[in-house]
Length: 116
Image (tube, rainbow, N blue to C red; front, side, top):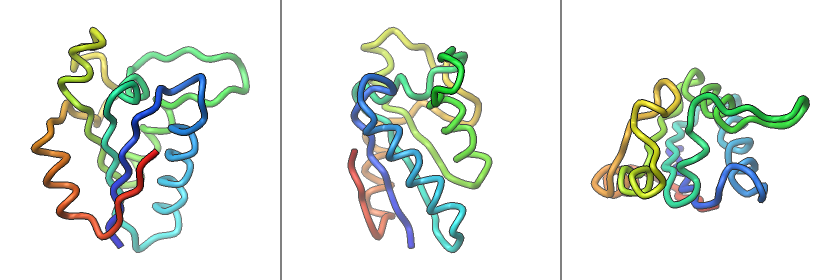
């Protein structure tokens, strides 16, 4: 199956993005799945490199890195990072600046679209 996740919520303060990342990782671990994630709105902050969190707390940047290393693809809304003052160079490795064209293409590609 080909699954697209669309994340809207910030990395911290709510667990919606965290739970989406957990499910995406689990699908990749299960095998026979192709996974893409598109971060839009406040979710773009999930991909900011250099996040420092308290000991024992989840780190969305690290989780996204695990997804990339497991073969998942991630895109980040360019308009949204601009609006939040995040430069493309501040994103974690393997996570490119994206666009609505990318999201449209990925939506057409997907068998399933899951939003968080």
